[in-house]
Length: 600
Image 1 (cartoon, one colour):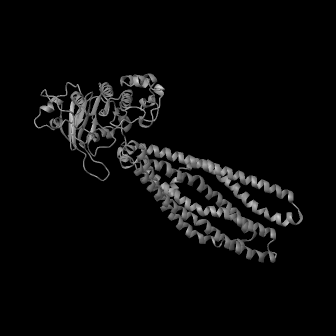
Image 2 (cartoon, one colour; image 1 turned 180 degrees about the vertical axis):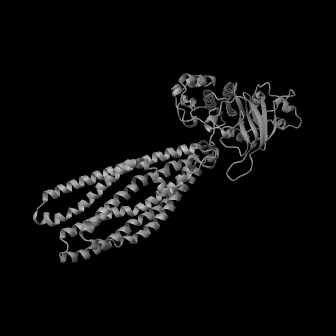
Image 3 (cartoon, rainbow, N blue to C red; image 1 turned 135 degrees about the horizontal axis):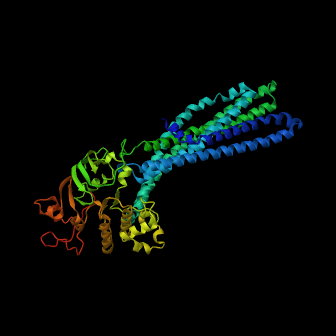
């Protein structure tokens, strides 16, 4: 479907308001033509002999009141419809974007998505409320004026309007140019939004490296490109008024030449000709507006194309027809010959033939060098991506045969990058458990060793923590994330222990909170600490996307030429000071840690 027709479908729910707006536009058009008609009695009756003065004066006031009311009602209702369409589109786009897979977000920046929701939809709002309103209202006004002109003298009206078709072709050509240039303008705006969002999000790095000038120059260059593109649109739009004025000048000259002859031959009265000329002059305003309507519509169509391109991008992770609600985990989670590659054209397999089984209630540590595929593996469990080969089963049910909602309801996550929202402490803990009461929130905070620091905040649990929780320390943010997972109380946990940057006290509290969180739950832990690895019921060793070994700490170390043994020898695990278990198995204390396992 053409983008403009598809856009109009979003205005269909408001057809009642549109009908009332059309009625108001009709009143405006009739009143506008009535003003031109009243010129005739003024010149033929009022001015020569002062007859009919009362009713003409009254009629002028009534017509102006009707015209004003019609214009107000039409403008208000069309703006209301436009704002409602914008609201609906933004809500639809926001929900649609949130429903996309992790791969979708990996291919698009936050700034780009924000530009689609804000800037592109604003262009659409202008089209629906103003451009379409002008198209309908001014077209009806033109019909009224033209009808009055043909009523007085059809031949003179035809003479005046002969030049109108001449301007249609350049209007169409200019409209096409405006659409192409507007799309480039929207793309430049998207790029500018991306640069700003990136710089603001990384403001600490920008300041630390003294790169404020570099970022300002990048932004300035992008703003300059946007300026030049917008000026191309402006130049195309600026051509239209002079073109219409030139056409109007020819029309007036022809009307005067022909009208003088008609008056001299008594075929037109002075009043009729004056009314005709008034209608012709009044036509100029609507015609000038309509000359810009096509260009404005092309701008809206360019924005609508970008909006519908996004809405037509469907998530890679969808519920299959007949998908079932997944029952709570009871027995095991099984990876059966799982393979995975991203769907962005790069067909390199990140995971290859991964197979293992995790009984319910056990903790599995996943270790390996950077790039081994650890994070990709755990991201397949909540179906942030779907496997491209094999299957993941929970109690024998393929995850793809279960609804995404029922699957994710069973999973809690504490990620390496702690994600909090600019809301209160209580709201962040209750995120995903919105019906939880204050007692449950506080209980989760106490279990996560967060209640103590929360109590010292200015408004306690009602304290707002800023964007991404920047008003809190790293350890405090991590404990809130753990409290959030505890409150959800899921049977399956995915953990990435991000404790390397914490001070000793925060690290101890976080580790204790994590131990409580994992109790009696099936846990997948991307392991960074030797103490975590030692506690694991099983260790899965990944290398280049393949499972090389599975076993407990001591078993794997005892194997000759084991991959885990090499990782251990390379000191790839954090060994906190005072950890009595942090030795190499032969009673020797290893040297200080050099490198840590990072996210795969």
